[in-house]
Length: 439
Image 1 (tube, rainbow, N blue to C red):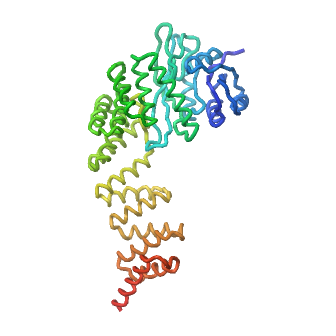
Image 2 (image 1 turned 90 degrees about the vertical axis):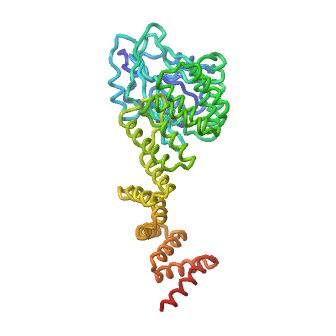
Image 3 (image 1 turned 180 degrees about the vertical axis):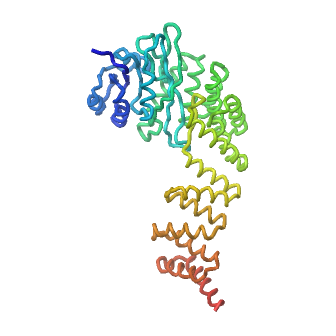
């Protein structure tokens, strides 16, 4: 039997929600799929069989490296790619990964980019991981949790790839999210207890404590990681960013600002440090500074999206989210006309989102651009004729323009539909009195 070019190795337990999407993303690449089942009771193994995966069973022992090493013992491929069920290989990364599967005379581990989808301001934050390596070259996994492959016999090459994985697990909700956090915390605390002078162990435990709201505990472990001074420049920049976020959550904005500046001084081409500086300025209502930092975020965001990451963890944003945010900051800074023009440009570009149109209407009203506001309100009302707020807004725009006949018609309609509304009745009485004075 011909040896496959690539074996995909996974450890799986009750992942029927995610597994099919993962396997679909690598089915055209994998000559062999190894699934190590650690006790599934749902339909995960039926899904694995549908993709002709080889299923092996393993008794879980609170050690991800032990399970990973058990999985790769079944690999026959020249190369091994390891994945979790909640990950997907981006379609455009398929040819990039295939190009990496060439014969090598020495052990090689490839680093890939992971886009971790979240439920917060960022569309995703970037991390990196060592996911692809050549088989039978003395490469094994190390680490009870957040495990990574390492060279165990001599030296090898570590290379940076442009391959991207999408990770959905950080967007979990409810019981699944809580169960994952509890499991991870137990293993991370155990890892720190077993190796108290390991900066990476303290770093990852600190990140976890932030995730569950234990920010004082997080700060203690993150500072321990910093004091151990074991990181290269890129990882240290990431640590400074996490420290900045932690100080901010602890109510220490000046310390948070200092950490973010340390990060961007170490590595200029990143998003995360500048985003922290933006958030701190916005939190302090320093609107001009916030705008400057946000534009730096936009510049670096485009760089990272086009040419890849520079630090081990970073954040990336959809351009539309940055546009919304910049318009918001401009409005807070009293630059309402600029805020309107930014949002209007998005509409002119073909964006039909009702949320965008409502935000643009609000900006037009704040900028006293009555004709623009009228067009937006009328257009929105045509799509939602039962919306009293829009009709009320349109009537008040007519008043601002001195178009009292049209305003009267609007408030007559509102009073007919909501006869008990005192504000509508008072405005209608005022409009009728004004029209009588005119005539």
